[in-house]
Length: 240
Length: 217
Image 1 (cartoon, chains in turn blue, yellow):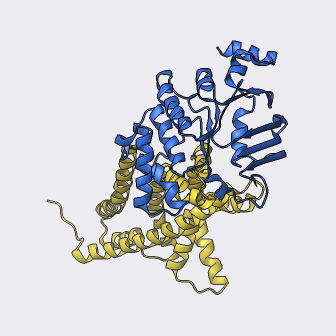
Image 2 (cartoon, chains in turn red, blue):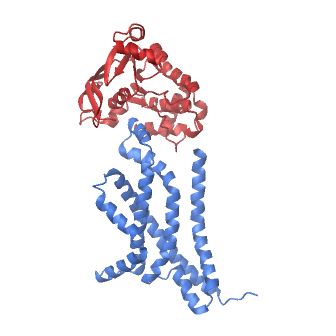
Image 3 (tube, helix red, strand yellow):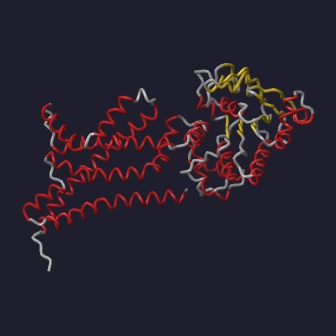
């Protein structure tokens, strides 16, 4: 379970998060929507401790992420994150990209790590690209590789940070299909996204983010069809 | 018909000088690179203020002409009673000189690795050291290699200056032959060719590596 309570975060004088509360239960898919610069992505990087926070608490399975006693490297093993930029390791083949962390972080033998990597890469439809370098892949393929790379660590939670925003429109579908598949398998996911159709179809709950706060959270039906807040309705009108 | 007084034993004499040039270069580039990696990496971890003393020393080493550094170092080690051989003095000075340039090359290479790529590595649970070893250094190496090859070739040629502290390397050997044989142009052509033969494999090796890496990009 991911429990976020009263989280504040600023970059310099810019307040990005201003008291965010959100609880994500096991198996749940939560989509976070909202305008650019509303702090959605920052929230994700706070959850796995890539960014420090100023106030509030984030707990993952009861472990306080920002406590000084927390071993972040250990905690991050169970929180996979995929970013907007594909962030492939350009000097490694697709297979090596995926096996690196299991081998070095989990201390897995090469053969075992490759078994897992092949399985995950097959899962995301890249079984024929194992020995290829990332530069030879399309954006959609690179992003699916990044998903396989995160999944190879057998995370309990997956965070997706606008994973389709940097893609050509015709490549968005293949990545969203992969996310759909994961959600169908019961993965606990938080998806920051601008894809409203996707958010509606895949999420159990949708959170509308504005000015560093969750303005409204509820079922897709509530958010998209009967939003309580006028701001939510206004945003959805511009996003459609 | 072209005639020369240059004998095979003179060529052997030149080869011996070339050996000294190679030895000084190899030792200096080896230690200079190791130090350069340490200094360059440290530099990326410190802010401008905490790095200031180190940056200052490296700046001095880069800006004072090598010849002056050699002569001063040789004089001071003598005054200090260290009793170093000219070869040792040459290697120490050239190593530090190489390190001062190499640290900038390493720093540039490390800073060229996108922060988001490092973030992705850390988000997979990799420690700082694992990120450096498996992601940052390999990626920085690809960026830095052309400059490093250039530095190595430069150090090989600059190493000729050690003749001023009495080391008989390739250029000094050629001067000795010129004085004796009075064939300066021919001997300098021969020596130039030897320098080229020493440099060429290094340049080619660099070219090969770059080509192989580019095929992956």
